[in-house]
Image 1 (cartoon, rainbow, N blue to C red):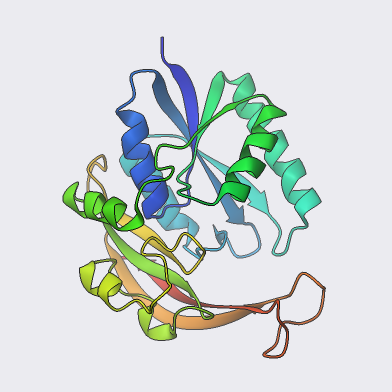
Image 2: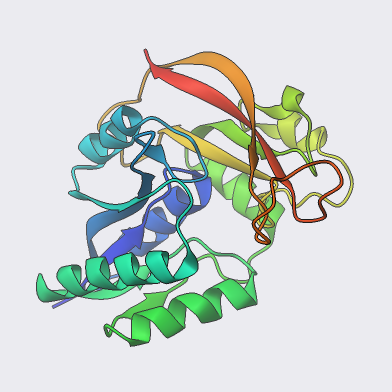
Length: 238
């Protein structure tokens, strides 16, 4: 019998491709989507995607969606506590593994595996150490389609936000930006996938900039080395 698994589901391209690969594994049965949600704005954390579109993805994949509901600016202690409680609940339902779309961030993988060991769950990383551009070529060849919904303005300007994630987008990336945005350069929303029952119709809304507080507790600004500014494209159900 395959092990039940959850997938850490952001709604973006890496999670979507990781799910595709996990579904090819005879020893895995992905049974749950787990998504961090900003409970104040009812949007996917960091991606800024409306909850209605996240739910549309879950409906088209035909998997239950578990929301890790978080405040606007949770501390790491708050996040860890909420995560462990949620993972523990899924473990009680029979889940034994957790799938992630991480590619090469070793510190992030180590953090995930440390948290999973406390439940305990076994981490699975089907995209690990693969070439970023090769992953995108596979993504397109399989029929996935996505829109860029968030960009970090340290790497990309507002013109990149709201664009289709296609070869033109990758061609226009500045030098040093990872094609998959693995360093947090951009995030995406998948509106079609080979395992969707049908595509998700979306309409591009306004593009807005948000600035996040620095870890030091000061208001992020141009002179703050920890300032974090992001452009978000608001997607509306079509």
